[in-house]
Image 1 (tube, rainbow, N blue to C red):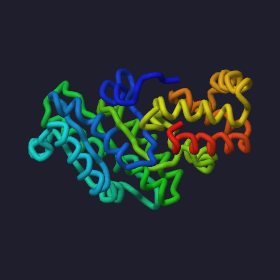
Image 2 (cartoon, rainbow, N blue to C red):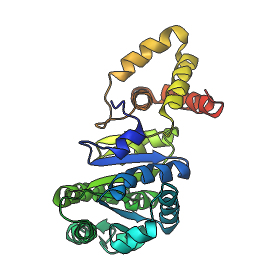
Image 3 (cartoon, helix red, strand yellow):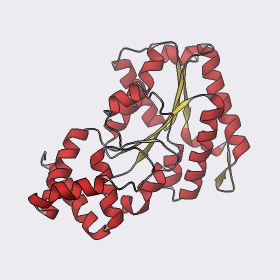
Length: 264
């Protein structure tokens, strides 16, 4: 499990090359993407944003607030912003991503930014295309696209952040959507305030299992690895319990949400 704060992870991914974020609040999305984009853009690197126009505008506004001239970066070619819907339509064939067409698009986008930066510069990307497919009820196409992104990461030498609009406290999310979103990634960022989330989940455990048993239950659940991806300890407990006992897991999710709402 990961113990690094998400801001630190996104600023300095180290060995992480394909990170996924799930979010309920769009402000968390914008903060995370800006944290991901800021280091290369503040240096000599570049960034590709494949997103909705609305989110592109919000991210660029945040980058400007962080002291960057987004317009100048776009003009220089170091920041490429492309529409997720248009990009998706350029390589989808019969409801599925076409491998050759996608890899050509990824190469063009990454190569264009790298040419503007120079050889050896770090290039990062952020994408919402997989989220668009998931929202359309096309989970197989979304998973196929994640797999193709991994090919592009290797071929182009880039890092990628994916974002899914998803409520990680909804039992339906834990019934399958979260596992599909995590597939192909190495690190999950599920919450903006992990300390508050951990406290809320701990108190929810006490509500569901009692004060004396809560610590033991948490320790046992923490040893279960039900998804092959690193994630904060509190999220791992929620995932493990819902996987082992869905009915009890739903109670824990509900109690966690209540404690978060009242500030734990």
